[in-house]
Each structure stands twice: as C-alpha cells, then as structure tokens.
Length: 301
Ligand SMILES: NC(=O)c1ccc[n+]([C@@H]2O[C@H](COP(=O)([O-])OP(=O)(O)OC[C@H]3O[C@@H](n4cnc5c(N)ncnc54)[C@H](OP(=O)(O)O)[C@@H]3O)[C@@H](O)[C@H]2O)c1
Image 1 (cartoon, helix red, strand yellow):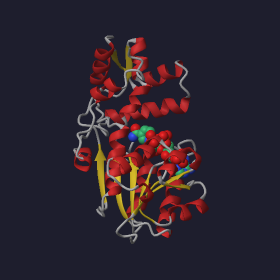
Image 2 (cartoon, helix red, strand yellow; image 1 turned 180 degrees about the vertical axis):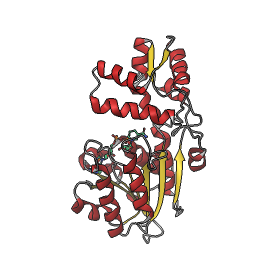
Image 3 (cartoon, helix red, strand yellow; image 1 turned 180 degrees about the horizontal axis):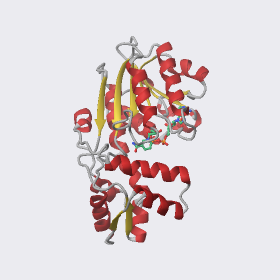
C-alpha cells in the first residue's frame, strides 16, 4: 500500500487525556488499523498498552526539536494537541512553532490543531495568544490545516461544582454570560473524525456542546441532582479576586479565574455550533447528561 492510500495518522501528546481518547476513537469508532496510528509522546512507556495493540509509539517532546522530525516522519495527517505549558509566557507558543516546523520538514500533509473559542487579539484569556499565533502559523505553513476551537470542557466543572455544593454558594463575576460546555470525549471523537477523514479544507470549526448555560443554569442542574440548593452570588471581578485570595488560591490562578469569568461575561464562549454532530454523527453531550454520568467525581451521592 502506498502512503497515500493508507495515510499514517499521528497524534501528539498521545498520553494526555485527550490524546488517549482520540486514539481510542481512531481505532474503535473510525476503524483505523492500529498500525496506521502513530502515538507521539514524551512518555512512550505510558503507552505500552497501545504498542501491544500495534500502535506505533514514538518519543516526541516539543522542547526537544531533534526528537520531532524523526517522530513525525511518515505521518500524512497529524493532530497537534496544544500543550499544557502555561507556566512561562511564550513557552507554549514556542513549542507549537517547533512542532509545525518539524511537520513541514517531515512532509506531513495536514495538521489538525486544538485551539480555543475566539482567541483573537483582545481576548481576556492570557493564553489566547498562544492559540491565535499557532493558528496563524498553520495558515502560513503551506500545509493543509484544520483548527478545532474546543470550547471549555464540561470536565472543568469538577473544579467549581463540588465547592458550590459543599458551601451552598457559587460566587461568580461572569454575570449573565454563558458557556457552551463541550465534553472532552466529544472533542476527542470530533478530532479523530477529522484526522481519519481525507479533509483538506483549511477550516476553523467551533466544537461546542448543544446549549450555552449561565452559572445559574449549571447551579440549578447540579443542585437538583444533589438535592441541595446552590445560591449564585454575583460579584465584581475585584470582589471575586479578594474572595479567592482569602480562600488561599494562589495569585496566578486567581488572575486566570477572573479572566475566565470576564471572558464568559463578554460572551466569548457562548456560541453554539452543530459541528460535533456534523463531524461525528452523534449529538454532543448535554451538561445534565455529563453531570449525571459523573456524580461521584462531583461528590454527589
Ligand atoms: N478546552 C478546555 O477546557 C481545556 C482544558 C484543559 C486543557 N486544554 C488544552 O487541551 C489540551 C489537551 O487537553 P487534555 O485534557 O488532554 O490535557 P492533559 O491531559 O493535561 O494533557 C496535556 C497534554 O500536553 C502535552 N504536552 C505537554 N508538554 C509537552 C511537550 N513538551 N511536548 C509535547 N506535548 C506536550 C501532553 O503530551 P504527553 O504527556 O503525551 O507528551 C498532553 O497531551 C491541553 O494540553 C490544553 O492545551 C483545554
């Protein structure tokens, strides 16, 4: 078989939560033979189970350019999973640039990239420029590209709902802003669908859940499931920051949480799209369904 008729599909960050599920869906949902899948990761040992199934596991670290070209060689289509390197400004963007440069050298045809909603200049989110610049780099790379602008994961609610349930209060400065939460699983299935397809579309897609919910909506759903009412307390950014600091939240994390609420208030994450359904043929999971499936993680008995 030529490389063209049987393209090799590469996933970076393959040992991460999203990467693993993408590989699962490539093989089990889209019937890609395991030996057509290349799992690129900093931790090949963590993917011994995939290697046993026939997946080609390779070592790749975006901090180590020398590792990348050989890791990407032979791949036709590649999912570039944005990294979690948010500690040092500019670090993540530099990592993504190295990955794109190595993909060009390795003759990869098409890159699929995991971005965020509305990353354009002016976003209150401090890491938005990493995504926007990577999108620009892809557009000028000469390669085919698909940008998946993943909305905030429903899983992020694990960070807020348990505390709201235990205290009975949910402090927010997001106002009436809404979020079109999407599950990581729906993002993984969608990314696998694009990777397994022959699309060469140079397109941006918003991956969202089926509805946009405000804090009041989510509090009502979680409160009803738990049988405990949650009072939503609307405060200013300054009041929220003071409350979080007093609760011992580290300063950089306080700034990030305030930015998230400001971004929601500006309705930057509220647009709902039908892309998950169009790509996968499955309706995206609602927040109610997601919370019902995860009662234990939410400390709901
Ligand atoms: N939409 C949202 O709400 C949301 C929430 C959290 C994160 N994200 C973004 O989506 C990405 C995937 O989410 P996730 O849930 O899978 O996060 P995760 O489980 O924390 O995974 C982190 C990912 O970063 C990769 N990575 C870190 N440093 C790297 C490096 N030096 N070179 C190459 N890859 C590196 C890891 O790959 P290996 O360990 O396999 O090398 C792994 O795939 C995150 O990295 C982040 O950019 C989005």
